[in-house]
Image (cartoon, rainbow, N blue to C red; front, top):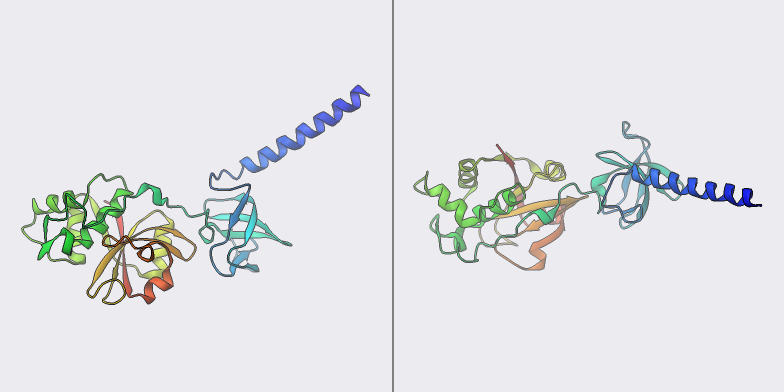
Length: 256
């Protein structure tokens, strides 16, 4: 009788260890009880990571069980389907952490009154403020005033715009790309590269305006507006909605 109990005990222990090993292989700190939440409408489930064959579609908001993962994909179970989905289609799978960024505002002291372009940072400094939001997640400790003052050590003047944003960033060891477009912007964000986006006159301002994008999850991006604290201008937003509100360019910020 004692031997039977011991065998049962060993069996239960082995099951526990198997489950622990299986879950440990996922190696993903973002998973909650082994599940992820779908953040895009009707995401495709691939038969394998190295094939484009689609075997199912999963609706927005669904929770699916994760059974394995790679750097870019989750292997999931959904109803009667087992297959692979891109991590960036889930809330938990975004590869860039917004917590590492500082959401600077151009109107804050002590930098708002520092000269910039035809006014000061408070009135004209959405570009350098967006730049400092982006580089804060790449290791920089500079605030908007620091960035502008470092620029004035080299350049005598700035005119608000992408060219000045690029000069300010180049001056302290960062690059600003040409416009990469919305589709590529999602890819860059998912690879940990923040973006300065530009909006034309309309929803955000009556003139041109720069803002920072510092995260992605599926088709959503995390918007940080250097001018406003309003919730519709800060936080997660579908990139298509962002573009419908006048955002027309995306510039990637990287270290030199």
